[in-house]
Length: 377
Image (cartoon, rainbow, N blue to C red):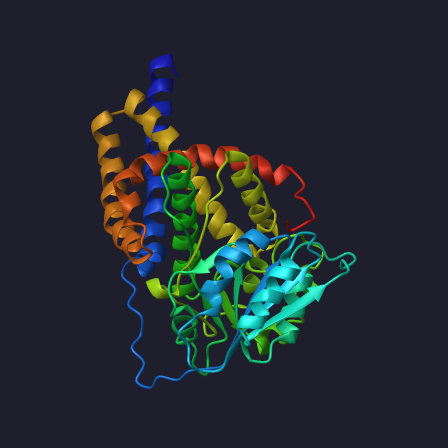
């Protein structure tokens, strides 16, 4: 084989690899992500309200509690409910602040933890205490740095429950602020939600986010709480859902009034620390979820390098056609999904943000090699 034939074969291999990677990407967009794009919440013939226990765990969160806790306390929900704040060994003024809130809001219950749980890192112990303290079957979880997007947050989230539903996955968004970092963070948050909400709609739920998550106490106790992964610093949200969620017992709620909002990290280091905690749990997912998520990420990571090489060394018309097909499917799929999650201001930048994902995967892949902190704060 002479050199020219070798180069021709090499160029063809690159192009066919590009076609294969693109086919995988298109499969995920059409089979999974389109489910969220064109999702319509089922219409319930009979509306029923349920008693709800809202649970918030906090450690040294006085400033966030002062700013965000009123949003959970003044919900327009006439049915019986309570708000439980588990103050986990705080050294700031959280105790005194919460005492003041208790005087004004009788449905607020504060649980003071004064000892660390041995060999149970992260938020799992305080959250377990909060769930065991809850008086009502439905618990609704959020964080101290989150605020409900509306006064109907509790009402909208509990509307998703019926006799078969035990888990409701919500969307935890970030406030929109100026700056490119905020767009990157919101894009990554949207991109993650696009996956876990779509997988749930496909009957294969694999995670939720603790910023906006609800389930019944019965499923928590059935799975013995977080005992299966008490040794993992994170996982109180995604690993529990990965363990307990099924096609029949899980629903999503993407009503804008059911969102929560939080401030995005203001620096790269804060964001990297946050993502390290998240990715440290992925290796504990079910094998099928590890495969599906890994295949998607790998195909996403390889797409643009293969496209550039094919454009330069093969046939730019055919390569551009492959790119265009994927691009059109992305537009058709992403815009309605962004609109549903109130992130449509990201749409004009989606191509740039999609290219950014190559660098995102590269940067954050090294976090898998770094041991995460054992503390949840």
